[in-house]
Image (cartoon, one colour):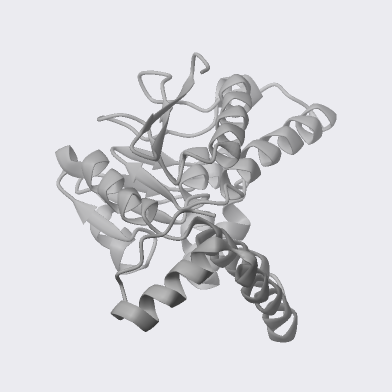
Length: 259
């Protein structure tokens, strides 16, 4: 697709590949290509799940500080809006998304990983929100997605100090879901993504949208969203397939068609 972000599809799993060596620094151009990639993954029916991957050495070491250093407030107000749109497009992909993290996921790199549903990392991975050390705060979702994932106190610790955490601590605080040997990160992430490919695509979409939308609402509003999504699935083929299979053959044997 683009020169800095590519999308390749194998057996229903899309790999969104960051390719700006050596550190996959996320500049304005890469942000735009991320948005295009997210749109392709979202709108291609044959894609059932996705993996975001930065390569064997580094996931993404943050936003392009050189690009931002001399910007003023009016300019950054525009830039930050576009940045949020790009990261928001990734977060809104209506399919399971796994971040495969090797090496550094710092600043904007961590914020990109937070846009995924799950994070698989290597044993030597390092995570952090170091923006405070530059006199700013996270600007691509870190102040919002990070506390929702690991809790406000732990998020404030990382954001206030700018410190890095290793894979072991990241797993302990819930920042990542799996830690594997460095050389197995991509394969582990694609295996996890492949588990969803045979699932009911519309139900997975509904589950993701209900959870994500409900996080910012009170319980009653969240339950109302759940009710709408739950009821709508009775218009799908997979609901008929799944329930008929359960009645006739027991649980876990349905062969879903994705509609």
